[in-house]
Amino acid sequence: MDLRLWIFLAFKVLGASSEVRQFFLKQASGQDCQTLQLGESWISQSPITCQRECMSRYSENCQSVVYNSQTGNCTPGSIAFGPIFYVTTSIPETGPSETLYYMRQPIPPCNTSNNFSLYDVCGTSGCLYLSTSEANYTDARTICSQMNSRLFVGNTMAKFSLFWYTSKTYMKVTTYIGLGDNDVEGKYVWENGEPLSSEQYQYVWFHRQPDNYLGDQDCAIAQHANWPTRFGLDDAFCYQGFHYVCERCEGC
Ligand SMILES: *[C@@H]1O[C@H](CO)[C@@H](O)[C@H](O)[C@H]1NC(C)=O
Ligand SMILES: *[C@@H]1O[C@H](CO)[C@@H](O)[C@H](O)[C@H]1NC(C)=O
Ligand SMILES: *[C@@H]1O[C@H](CO)[C@@H](O)[C@H](O)[C@H]1NC(C)=O
Image (tube, rainbow, N blue to C red; front, top):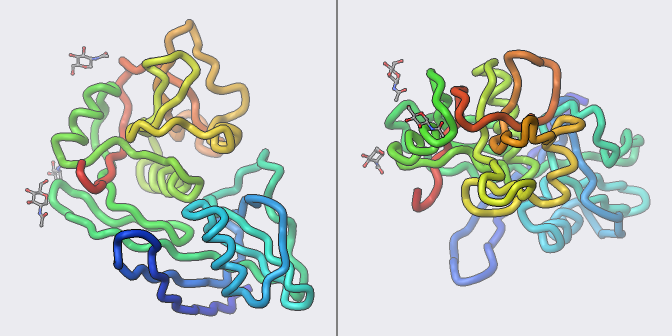
């Protein structure tokens, strides 16, 4: 499916802010950008009401919908850079009257000093620094912080995909992401303090990981150097030096 259809939607954010964000609906083939079903389908009047309802039910985790123009069936989804072989909740192949739309997320401003730049995959963008040398986890965190940023927080499926895509495509080396269980063994927490959700737990780890090898592996890595075709994180010793990804964020 090469046909590309862009619909621009002005979307007023609820709450105190009167900021107007733009979302784009894009028809996509879903090859590299895999959809992950977020829940049961419902009936909607149009692709746009389907998308609005998905946003109100799943907020930022809603990043795609499959809409059936004959039945009005609306299936909510997230988006992930794939393929993720072992995830069983992928939305099945679409039929002739079903269309997959994915929603472009707002593009953040990017202060490009310290070699930060804007990266984009599957409609999600981030202002990132891809390290050119190795550091242990604590040093990597400090270096990011000194550049007014933090170790990458992949707290939605789409953001995790952005990390996976950039580190796999541009770095091709073993890379830290901002996720660890230093405080309480087994309780993984993102660098912004948010716990790893149980939904995310199911797909961000490679199978049988994290295994807390030798009882001392508390920091998450992508093993692109050793296993370039593997999808999913491993846990590693935090004192080991690896590459890392920093992201700009508000208030960093
Ligand atoms: C961009 O970042 C640099 C270094 O972190 C900072 O010195 C500068 O003031 C920032 N520029 C803007 C426009 O925020
Ligand atoms: C930014 O890139 C330049 C040129 O490649 C390099 O000399 C410099 O060390 C880089 N700075 C950082 C903070 O990585
Ligand atoms: C990280 O490396 C620094 C040296 O760059 C060292 O001082 C520090 O102890 C190391 N931290 C850990 C937790 O290994």
